[in-house]
Length: 509
Image (cartoon, rainbow, N blue to C red; front, top):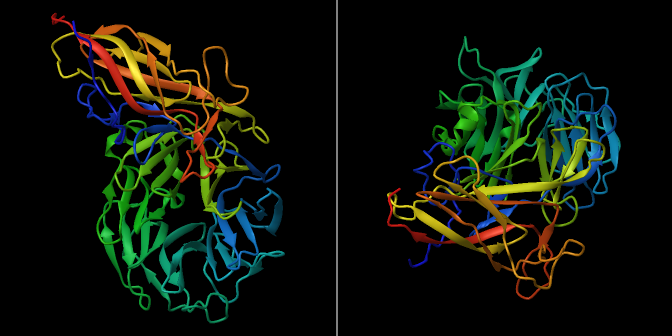
């Protein structure tokens, strides 16, 4: 019988955890982790993270913000814990800048004209200019949570006792730190009398201040009176830290999953393809953390059965495709702390004493001080494929793959959960292997070169699924851009084209 080939090179649609295994569309995957969708084709292993700072014994970081002078004379991270604020330099040096706080459940920040303002529900608003200790802000700014800065005014959800309510207060235009900066008349109560809601967080949008409560979404659109409208009466947000704005769209997490809204219309749920993660598992979402990162929204939450945030969703804002990785994030923070390039950092959810640099190097870290490097395991499964003929048995002979890295290829037959065979992909021996990693007949390849290899796997069945696996602490360098020396790092594995070679039996069973 003639050997046939099927070319597969669409990996662009991400996870699909809801469709029946016999009905998953091409481009989706029923199971994948620690791979990301390459923007212009293929899938690539994610990079790991490495230490930046140790906040000290007994310190648990909760929130973080990037601080930078406009003339670039000072760049720091500021981390808030339960009883202090600390500055973190690019070298990881930590200094206390505010101490003696009453135990709080989260600090919100706003950086305005070289001055950092911060407040929580228990402690009065303080400011920091980059040197020495913080100082109390003048006037009567409310305790609570900063919702954003819009129309040159700071908007704060006011706390009452030990929790936020539904009252929003705002400053005078351009005046945040004077005896008259916070007039009592600058306030509005959302939701009307008798509501049992509370404000969770907010974001500054072009058309106003977008405010999320426990079960609803509002937009304040008038900077003089606080006039507002109810954008969504059914959906709010579960965590202030999950809110991020990407290209004028606010994204966050609630009990239904990941949502998006531009502040003009009701929330749109963008995570329906991964509904079981929210509906079936019922994760803990109150401390979930989100951030915008170039063309993606990264959201980490406490998956059921874990003691901390341990699963990060990588959602491409344009397409809505979702992938997942094992980053443990309590809070994200980003800024060009280490140079002119944008950097991403996070407070380690597995041990909030530590601040990590994200997407750097090829390892994850244990929670121990300062963290022991461990290999990253990535895997990706293709959906079960009938090769265009459901009724007849297909006999698989080999797999041709275009990619890189020490990839293991396994095969599943007819909806089985276990693999029926596997083999290490045989890329040719070439120059450019990473120093110290090559062994006889195998190699981990450096550079953004693509290689063609074969895995000779024998299997037969009506529907066949392939699984790709790699585990290492290797990285690869990015490809040359206009003949310049590569400077970027990539994950050590990539898959860009898969071509099963098979024959079709005349037998139906």
